[in-house]
Length: 180
Image (cartoon, rainbow, N blue to C red; front, side):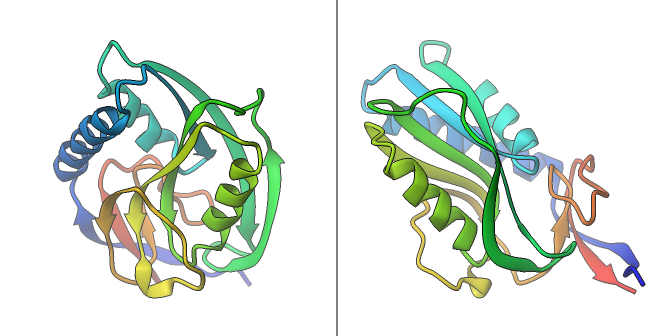
């Protein structure tokens, strides 16, 4: 029988998210070291809202390219299987290109570590990672995060791209979810 869930409290308001996303965009652009081209790789589907807002906050003189990858590591709506599968890969080579991975959340670190290793093996000029949410209490493997929006407690969260079994991605705030 499928679990039922209900929305909990607002953990991050849409205003606070927008403020932090703008700060991250400025920091990433500043750290780009005068290089004017950046490939932003969004991890589908959760990072779409974050990636969109992030790149729209970047300066006009930064040549931003966007591509997507889709991975799966979830056995059910809330628990990672630990096995990462690539469902959709990048369209083009990243060799010699500055790459920024944009992910919605890092918890165990297994998926993000796998993606970093995979892309690093493709020899980009640089590889950095930006996550909206870091749930470090659940970390199972060391993973480098260059830019982090927010540290959050060990709670299941939805909204601003994050979902629970396909629900609540569209919410403008990030909220906790409680099992019934």
